[in-house]
Amino acid sequence: MRSSPMLLAALLVAAAGCGKEAAPGEVTSITSKGGGAHEMTVKGDAKEGDAKLGFGAAGSVKLPDDWPKDVAVKDGSTVATTMKMGGRMAVTFTWKGTAADAASWYQERLQKDGWTVESPMTAGPSTIVSAKKGKRECTAMLNEDKGSVSAMVTVGEGE
Image 1 (spheres, one colour):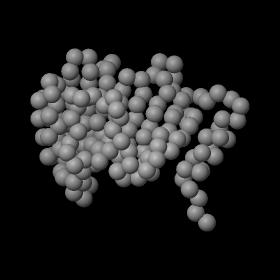
Image 2 (image 1 turned 30 degrees about the vertical axis):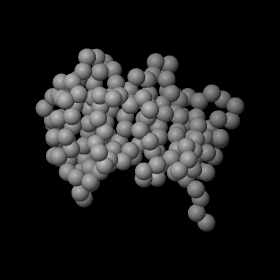
Image 3 (image 1 turned 120 degrees about the vertical axis):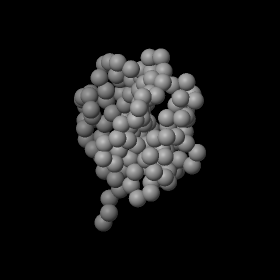
Image 4 (image 1 turned 135 degrees about the vertical axis):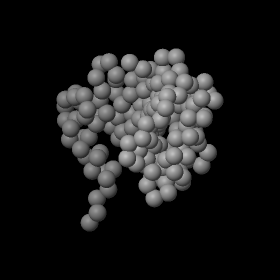
């Protein structure tokens, strides 16, 4: 008999919540968003607040409504995961291509949208493109595997 990962997660949340307030790092809820997408809330600290994580079946996760307009989304990409905590957001996009092409695309688009882009850094299969605009920072961590790119893009206020 196969058990549903969502059922297991819901049972863990229920068991963890038995009459006590969640500690930072504990899952406080998992909600179905329909179409195979889900949202999980994780208890945060007083400074950052709770974290919201979006995940689900390929193509079911949606870009957050408040994703910054000056951080472009590559045509043909799919949102794989989302996360919001405090003043920061992170979205993982996937598409067919190479990390080198993705790094060039992010450099060009961020510059076009008014960001000051730093030189990309490469370590093994990963390339990182970082940019600043006022007090905000944007980082694209790019990984390539078998003709597909995974880009985790974070944006928010810098330290």
